Length: 447
Ligand code: SF4
Image (cartoon, rainbow, N blue to C red; front, side, top):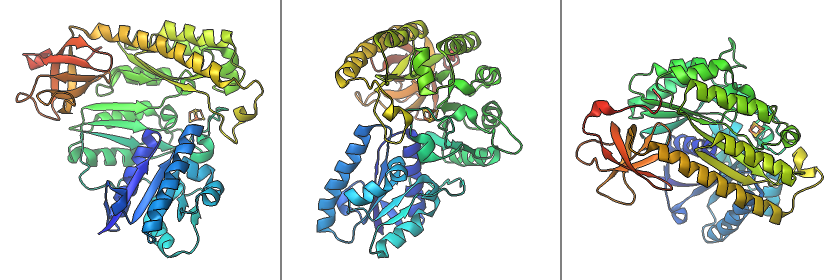
């Protein structure tokens, strides 16, 4: 069999796309290999969200040049956001590359690889294409948890972001296609799905008849055998009372909400074109907490956006203190060519970004640790997903609020079970627990 090696950078969407590529090429008799030296085809799935991610891709392509020198028949492909955005530069700077393709062309990857094998010059396929739901997966990927793309693209045009350029306009998959995919996954052993979209809570408004994420929750909730539903990433702009009610009422939807704030300064939110103010954001957090008092909240934050002053940054610290997130992802602003923010005046020096980054991380880490303490002594529902990485005698799983729990249940519960676990210890990155004697002690965090 011909061997395929995939290198994936970036977000969950990219991981998902890589899986689809592996599945589609499997149907063309390609077998996945972990060892790039064995591969006949290597595809690098790229991310363009930060400059560092792009540098990493060019450095990987440099290493592949050495490999190809030893194995001239090797086909090297580049896909993902960088492929969509920087195709010319990739072809110019990395002559090792035989194929560059964007996400709309994924469905045709088999044909593209064949063309690249025979062609004398790089094949570039980065135009728009029809929205195709690809459900192919690599062999042996029946798993407990799966990502399911419910929509592609984004139309928000935040001034720092390349996604609207790389992924195009918002396009939703019909609910029946999504439900059919999830039924198939469940038949293969899946128990938890994460519904994915760049702006997942804008789902469905482009469909005829229009629908929304709340209605999709209800339909997915009816899939027998599925136990949990997660979703990401939501945009505050599209967070409606109907969605908050569905988040509260649909039983399989977990009590974990990722709601990017990006900045706590109204001036910066406006410059970022985020479409909400800090007051609106805080009101949404109140709505979520009123509906689901014990909701776990996570967020994305940017430090050093152009023009960010010390008082803008203080406004971000203030919102973070008020919300008390369970988890926060802090990013230093990175200039992305072609985005409006890249040419804004008052770019913030790197040392200032580094210093603010460190201060914000100190705060988010402290608050997350404090939030974790609330779980101490509680009995929570854990979806068992494997053996603990640190202690082979223990099992591991996640709570509905998405925390890792290691516990002593071997021989009594199995992978795939929902276990009731009492939390005995709260560590910085995980929880330790013990299997509750009575299974019926299992409680959801907020119901
Ligand atoms: S909503 Fe998200 S994906 Fe869309 S432009 Fe803004 S940051 Fe990018």
